[in-house]
Amino acid sequence: MCNYAIYKKYIEEAYSDITKYCSQLQLSDYLIELMQARFKRVDIKYS
Image: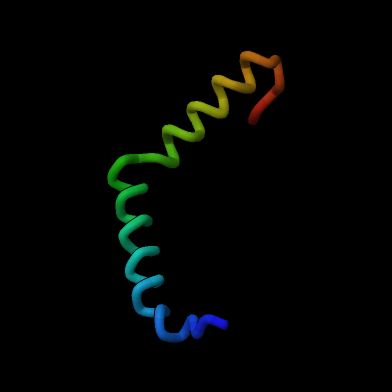
């Protein structure tokens, strides 16, 4: 069994880094744009 308390700091730091990367790369905007394009292609209404 793994003691996750040992890794808590590292997990929090990794989460923080990933959040920063996503923000700087504007991944949320890109994924929304990608989903909208996909929905238009299959004729699904997205609002």
